[in-house]
Length: 330
Image (cartoon, rainbow, N blue to C red; front, side):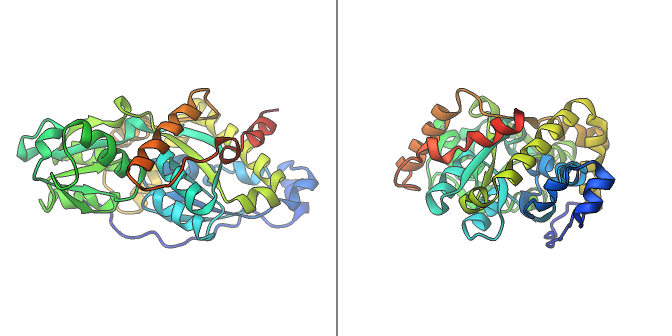
């Protein structure tokens, strides 16, 4: 078994240069040549793979957009990069977005996907653990500060009667968790795809619970307020590319799957295409603004306030910039 645990180095990807080439070669309107270049943050777990595919699909180029990409193990790290103004756009789930809004005024330009089916609490198979409450006194690998980390600590564990101190939380990046489980340095992990599918297929771990029953885990495309204020046309064109990307996830899934599969195998993962297809299939790509999103996010804000991670809930009227997607869909 080979588990990749090497950091991904920064890779600059310039889509195309020259307004004439854009207009002549791809049918893009000459006015689009003035689009701002995007510093795109994304996580290298399965949550970030729709964004990875977007960057490798040609859809950004089609819409006249140049970009640089910044890959990190999890979305909370992307959020931190955005708060530090090192990247302009990036994806992460609700709790991380709320914290990013509190710390850096980040705004959301769309709900991009639901990933509740990709996140699981898993235990080492040799321990015979079948329920979350059996993790009392155990070592639990967790990406501390991440959305799934916060949901596990604040909701899943507490519902099972476990509070901080009842288990030993081991701070671990999600891409290192399967190796830690295999080495038996931890007893359980709070992790995401494709690592869960790898652990399951390798016989290392079994699932205690997935997050979908607790939380559908909508993932947002967030942006720094400065970027959206200075580049509204770029944001609209960017979201148009996302709408096309979502269609390809539905109509050209084999192409999407192959592109993302090559990413993981190029980094040293060894998994069957079947295993990978199951993992990617748990991501629901559907850009939009669901009607129940505001109360859902208010609930998460109240959880974070109670946990003393933020002082007050965001103003959703300003935190959610719904106008850009409306224009993109018009």
